[in-house]
Length: 258
Length: 238
Figure 1 (spheres, rainbow over the protein chains, first blue to last red):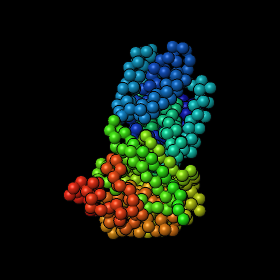
Figure 2 (tube, helix red, strand yellow; figure 1 turned 180 degrees about the vertical axis):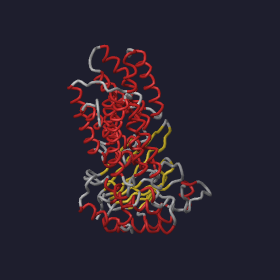
Figure 3 (cartoon, rainbow over the protein chains, first blue to last red; figure 1 turned 90 degrees about the horizontal axis):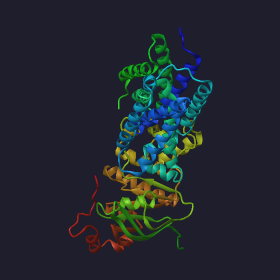
Figure 4 (spheres, helix red, strand yellow; figure 1 turned 135 degrees about the horizontal axis):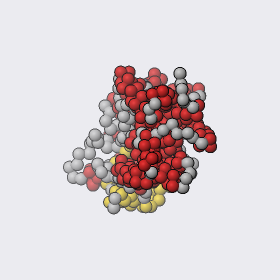
């Protein structure tokens, strides 16, 4: 049975897992898988700044991730560099700053996650924000898909709004990454947005099932990951990711024929 | 009775990366007209289309009639093999309800598919598994779903076989007759231009001719468009 695992952690792992799987479904289709990986690094200077000012690191993470996603969105529209190059520049810079500025005692937790006790306001904020982000992702699913399939057709269908839907995708993604960093860690959180949709893509034939299965798998991996980590006394981040990769391996046996 | 203009283009120029791709083009399109745009490869036809759709910056005037609804069938539409979307879900992007489509929408969809000669069974197929001809018909149907006033059609038959090509033009002609849809199409195929277009606009970066095919498509003008000895009969971009 589950021991030493608080209800808070269970709720957070489920919410973050489902939110990661849902938004990750679109990130994979848009071929931005590594953006999430790198975006989470932007959180590191945020953590350092929050620690310096003695506020909960979560708020620093949230501000830096959302700002990072807006910068990527703007740069992607303004330059001809591929987003990988932009991300390479921006996020490794953040990682370098983060490593230099975060106190040594906090580094491991920042990078790989922890069962750190959450203050009540932060717990409520993460749970409610996570649930809202899940709802918003499903609500905007059609818009996200439209711009991924053809940004031209999306623009013609909705000339005034199409670019804002793109921004919404980036910001929701950044928020989800920010919510999960405390539990999963800055280095590994991106992977939680990549693994569930990768498994789901292997086994789904329709878009509806792909998104739903991805969201459910995210919740499943989050929940069982923290359960396992708690029982084995592991860090939650690496346990969640290794469990997810294991499931991905298993899904290869059920891959639909293209 | 004189039909009203649905589109007015005046002194349109498009400059991309400091290169003039489209230079000082002017023309009008009347409601219900079928206009074919022809020109050699690299003449700026697709750029002109994308500019008309508001996708590229330009100088000059592009004025659509107010409240006009536009359908667009792009030249290139590629769905990656592993992209998990069915044909029905592709159409649902145009429905207000993606997750729970209403019955009326699905009935209307099946009716529209029948107009382009497709059965409703195709709706459950993955979009990436369609043949070139099926995809082209799906795209026409998709563009026509909300009954647009004008349909922009880039290279309708590039990459599909002759039988399917014939069907597509028959469908286009039928839509034009039945719904009075204005059609603007890019084509390399002069047979198509003669058979289906009311007017033709010839461009090679700048404007070369505009008028009825039988009036403007003479050997002299064709040589100006495609160059002396140019291969202009039924050429397709691959």
